[in-house]
Image (cartoon, rainbow, N blue to C red; front, side, top):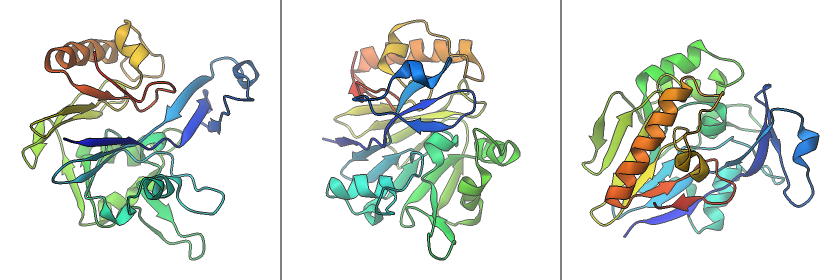
Length: 248
């Protein structure tokens, strides 16, 4: 049976500036964050199977007060050495999902992949698009290293990895978004990135203004929810502040 560990980096508000500002639910007030601000969790996931330590997206790439990459610290706090990660599954390369792809050494300034022993799986068109669209949502400095390393596999369309990790091209949230279904024979675990980011969005016919194609994203959520109901999927919600994992 697979083990799922949410690796939350915390709650943040984000508005039209695309800046992610930490939000402390015990003392901060959403009304003070201005009109249009959204409250989201930034929550990569670790899925441990008999074959792999799978990391689903990589967070913002922030460091904690001790200068340690927060994602690394979260793994360590759960008894996992970051060097044990075998595969990194990237839904897309927006900075809140891909900021932890690489890290800059605070002393030397050199940038390296945050999980050097892992194989990264990235949509090839998303990679090209991220470099072309360098700016608010994509940061080429953080993800550009993926093009230069041998432990990166560029994928497209639909397919499978090692026979049990299935990926599907979706578009919707961004032009080249993809999702993953991990099926180890006992569990079916669905990581929908930003086409299935919160449980509440799955239940309603919600069209998000921040999606590249809001109508398509809404339709995808409905489709995945129905498939998940039929096959008893566990959904991993990257941006849900209350429910990281759920079933329908």
